[in-house]
Amino acid sequence: MKKYIDCVRKLCNKIKCNCLLNRKSVVYDGLAKEFPQVIFEESDPQLDHAGDVEYVAKIGCKSFGIQIKPVTAKANFGNYSPSERMKASFKEFEEQYGGKVFIVFSLDGEIANKNVLDEIKHEIERLSSL
Image (cartoon, rainbow, N blue to C red; front, top):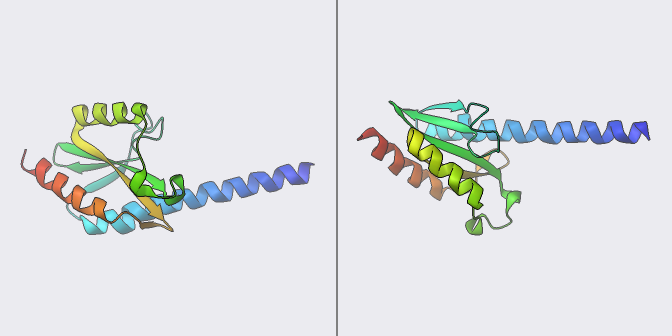
């Protein structure tokens, strides 16, 4: 039984590690290269306590948020809808930092919902003009 438990632990750690690496890849190999004028940082643990804002993207004194979800979080990410708790958290973030929170879907470390790039571009332009 102990061997089984150890095996499950190793598998869980490997999955967790892969998810973390994929998230970092989406941000630093994807978003940071697409938007070099933006400073991307891992969020404060209080912002990410519920998994709502994982990265903060800074534009001058304003910021927008990034939440990364694996495509498997919803088979068809076009129909993904944040919970009421998440919506409230996103609204609170926007009131505090000035920018919206974007949900970026990850597939093998790549951005799956490419349309979010246009939305982020518009948000960068908006925040830059404030």
